[in-house]
Length: 354
Image 1 (cartoon, rainbow, N blue to C red):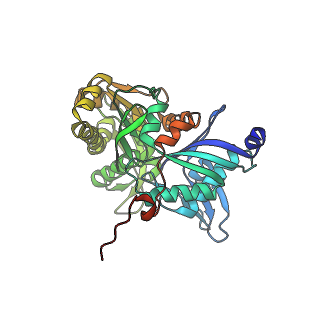
Image 2: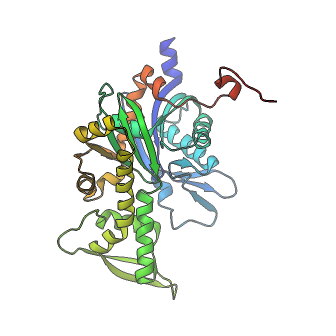
Image 3: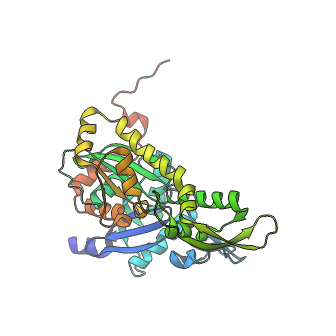
């Protein structure tokens, strides 16, 4: 029977991110890492492209095609597009043999029950036989190598595309978790706003993201590096090229970086004294794409006066951590969010006031 179960079902750990989706499969590791983008025919509803192929169309969309980023701020904004994207990704992983799957999915710590339900429903429509949702802060901690049996508290800052998840983890469970709506996408938008205000020029999404990757920094740097970017002049509507320096990009990103640092500090300030003492000893674990921003770890270390360790594979930390939970069913059962039940089932005694 066990052999048949393996043949007809598969375990998958999924990081359904705003910018990228990663899928981990036990025994194979991370088997998919693609942009969370899907291109759908406007009139037939057919999926034309998904992932990197769909991302190529961003900013250059044909008139009979709609390109969706169905996940926003870590939660599903367009249910139908998210379901189609997830099905396409899982088909690719399972080599077009769609099987009933047990999925573990990391979601933001501050997500509402309605937002979690939308993730569950999308996964079930993608042929999931069982869906377990876990705080992505815990997943990131486990994916970064934290030992579940460590009883000390650890501070985890996972800077993703749509959200920054700040969690405190101890004994393989979440002590506290908060999601900030500032992360990689907010950095891109800050660059676009800066260029619009200073140069009266509109940048495309992809250009802003590329500029962040090339010149983005969370600290002052020696020397002056400049990059030419081309956008659309607001007054004439024609193409315009300007050179933008490293110091300008850092200035544009400063409000977003400062808000992330403030969110991490707030989590420490609101914690119990024993937790604060533990964090002083254990420090901070930095994961997510934002961990790759030049100087981000140094900035957090200087501002919070804590040792900061960057995960070996910060982009895949959530997927790897969710994959570790697949191998520990009892721990997964303990930390997974339960679905809402009717109030008369959740309460031992139903009291009615007439």
